[in-house]
Each structure stands twice: as structure tokens, then as C-alpha cells.
Length: 113
Length: 113
Image (tube, rainbow over all chains, first blue to last red; front, side):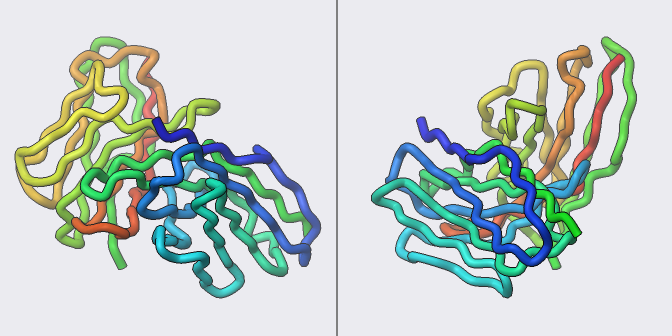
């Protein structure tokens, strides 16, 4: 069974600092990995999806890398802003014909003004 | 933009009541999902559906049922609500195919008293 871990559980940084969020998974036979953002009391928003054949994906200040062999993904957020404060979750798709994702518990980020 | 709409943001019900949670998506997605999210336990899949009138059990189906009579609508039913079903319920949908992003609704916070 795929296990997804996100460490740390919480992170607090001053505005302007770069954020580095980590995600690890136990089974390297994945099809893709998604990073989501969740604001308090709200649903999840997909930020980036990295296919298994890709090493990274970028969107604006966000960059996500994937190292399948070591079972790791990292989400980088450049020049953090208070509006980046949220919980970030990663999720792994291990089956091509089955859309059951395995989610990490998330990292809660606070960016201090 | 894809929209996944959950009919209620907050719901308070009594133990033993039958509860219906409704979810509608507007992008003609084949796949729809119901998750619950609890502090410390993360997201857990309750049921999912690949097509109209089709349903599959997720990881925690006990105490729940679902209905998908139309492609755009996926309903979660709590036959006899219990206090341990107090949770945030999240509906999601995605297009068929590999490497498709998952889109979530805003969630329904259900309290069973």
C-alpha cells in the first residue's frame, strides 16, 4: 500500500523567504504526483501535476520536482507572500486505471508579514 | 474553469437522521469521488464512480451509500447518521485518462449531534 509522508507538518517563515515543502512516498511505481493547496475550511485546489516521466513542473512562483527512484517530491515557492499561507498536500496516483489517490497529511504554511 | 459545487457548506443533523450530500460538476467528467477529511487522519476515500449508475467502494464505505443517476451529479447518503460521521466531506471529479488533475468542491462541514 502506498504511504505518503509530508514533513514538516507545519512551517512558519517571514515574507520574502523561499519555501521548500517535502513529500515522500514508499512505492516508486507511480503515474503522477499532484500538489494541492487548501485554505482553512475550504476544498483543495490542484497546483501542479507532475507525470512520472517528468522531473519537474513550473507555474509562476511554484516549482515542483520529482525523483521517482528515491520516492521524493519537493514543492518550491519563491519569494513567499502572506497570501501563500495555507496547507499544502501532495497526492500520488499509483494506478493508471484507478483514480484512487494516496494523500499526504499536508504541511501547514504560515508566511509572516 | 471547472466547477464542482457542493450543495451545503455547513450542515447540522441529529443522530439517526438520513443525510444527503449533493455534488454537481459542470465539466462532463466521468469520474467523481467522495472523501472525508479529519484532523490527524487526512483525506480518506469513501466511494467513487466511473460512470452513471456505477459505484465503487473506497477505503471507508461503511455507513455510507452513493447515487449517480446523472453524469454531473454524485450524491453521498448517510443512512443513519452517527456522531463519528461528523467531518468535512469533500467531493471531487476528474476526466477519464491518465494524468488528469483532480478538481474539488468547497466541502461540507457536517456535524452530527
